Image (cartoon, rainbow, N blue to C red; front, side):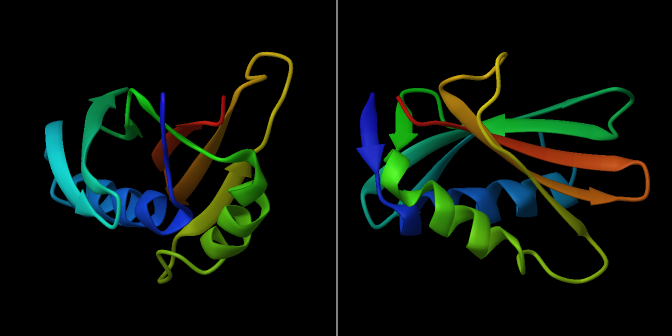
Length: 112
């Protein structure tokens, strides 16, 4: 997997979030500091749950803590922030989660 910078990961998350707000599923080529990154946006659970990610890319483990800090005030507004770190079922990935009422935006990020 290709390692991309924290800034590029943040760019991909914000771009995917914008597609989520428009309810636009699909694969999108996002221009980042590390070049173009393909981001996948998929809706399920009656359109209230969105899973996103960038297959083939990963974030360096050393950037995970900074990502969690960044997420605490993004995207802002009335959204609740969530961050799933490593666990038994996800030993090689983390997730950035934004919630509003019964809607969930979940961006999966691999680290190894």
